[in-house]
Structures are given as C-alpha cells and as structure tokens.
Length: 365
Image (cartoon, rainbow, N blue to C red; front, side, top):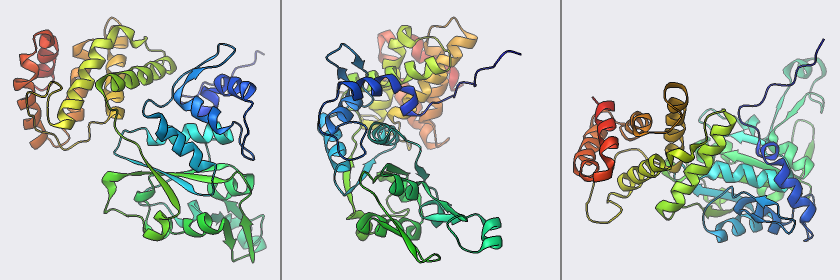
C-alpha cells in the first residue's frame, strides 16, 4: 500500500506559505526581540516590506506602501497597546494583520471574525455543554476563545471587521486590553495575559455608523490608517504580485504576459474611484462601489482563469471585461449609466484601448 500525501491547502496560512523566508530571517536576525517574539521588530518590518539578507536571501514584500506605517504598526505591538488597522475596503488590512501575527508569533490562526452574529463567547470563552451538564462549571468544560488562547500563550490574536460586531461584544475587549485579564466568574478565576500577548483588530472606515467603537474601546487601540496605493505603478505592482501568487497556488499561468491588462484594470478602477482621469483632463462620475485594489486582484485572477481554461493562456481584454463590469456595476441602474458614460467618453477615445473598449461593449450587451 502506497502512502498518500496530504492534499495541498487552497490558501496556506502566512507562516506556512512563507516559512522559508521566516526561517531565513530568524537565522540572520541578531537584534533584540521582545519576549516570545519569533523575530525582532526590525526583522518583522523587513518581512513585510521585503529586502535582501546578508546571505543573499530575498525577502518578498508583503505590503507595498509607506515604510513608516509598517514601523508604527510593529512598534505598537511591542508595547502594551493594541493595534487597530483602519481603512477603506481593499487596503490590505487583513493581509497585513495575518502577516504581522505570523512574523511575531508564528501563528496567524488565533482569529475572531467579526460579523453581526458574532457572540460574546467568540471573544471570551464558551462551554462544552455536554461536560457542563455532567460536571458543572469546570476548566475541562470551558472552551477558550482564540483571544483567551493568545493571552495564555503570549501570542498575537486577531479580530477582523471589529465594527461589524455588536457593540456589547466589542466592549468585552475593554477589560482584556486595559487590565490584560479575562475574568471567568463561573469559576471564580481569571486568565492573565502573559508577556508577548497583543491584539490586532481591523475595521472598515466605511462602516461608520454600523457599530462604531465606543470612546472607551477606541482609547485602548493605537490606530494606523492604511491608505490606498499612492500611485498607479504601486497598485499595478501589488495586483501583479498577488495575482501571480494566487495563480501559482491554482496552477494557472504566470501573469507576466498580461501586464497590459493589469494596467488597464488598475487605470479604470483608479479613474472611477478618484472621479478624474489619470492625466487630470476629464472629470468622470464615480460608481457606488469601492473599486479597491482587492477587487482589481479578483478581476484579474478571474480573467486569468478564463485565459487558462478557455483561451490560450495569455490574459487579454476579453478575459477581464466581464469582471470589470461586474465590479463597477454594483447598482444595476445607476452604476451601469456611470460605466457606459465612462466607456464612451474615456475608454473609446484611447487609441491603444480599442480591444478593451470592444470587449467591454460586448460584455455589457
């Protein structure tokens, strides 16, 4: 009987996908490390921003943006204040959160996903009700949350979409972040955070008014605002890198032949997002959607799949047109009018965009 290997994960955790880079950094890192950190703050920043180690090992950039933002985020985690990553959708908040946790603790899985249905137990603890009924309240019947496990192990916990959680669930974090303890009244005990514990939360600043943070909770965080990519070149670079990574994991062709289409998608998204063409000459209306970098990555990845399975493996305008229309026209009535106007007044006039114009017209027919 032959042994079968475990199936490959569709999306490995950061600490698994970049294990070689993390290992090389740990070996080359001779700077002071906070207690229970796998790397020094300098090495964590290098892991996120990329660089070349003395032995020639190349560390790929995980975040493309201002260096100071990364340094402030890493320095915050080295203090007793929690970190809040704030920004519009698609600014790599979750991506940065995961990679920070992987570099600091070697474990990015201590995660609470915030939704309207997130219960208090997801942040504090729950109970194994079979054991609770058989034994009564006991440590054996208690089910620790990811936050409780991070406190006990001196690791970094993550809370995604904090402002989507109900306000009373959000406020369970106040004692944890201010006193660094988690009371368990049923047992007359508490869990004290050991050194190395901290928390990274992400929030979408378009969710203001959904479940806005109380001033008491907001004071427990150091807030770092993640901006959209500053230039078109930066955004093209981000999209190309992420699509290439995703394409490799899905056994899709490398996207290098599709660089022109990536640039077109990014240009369309930036112009509609900003309300003006890149040359500043023409004002355009903006649709209701965010048209974020993450959505551009999704459009190009979908186009790459079309090119791989129903084309010749080269990304072309026909492969991304439908995805662009789907991303722009979130409101079938108003957004479609915005898109048609942009298509006729901007795209049609670009001499080297004729194939893209034709593909988009056909996709919207």
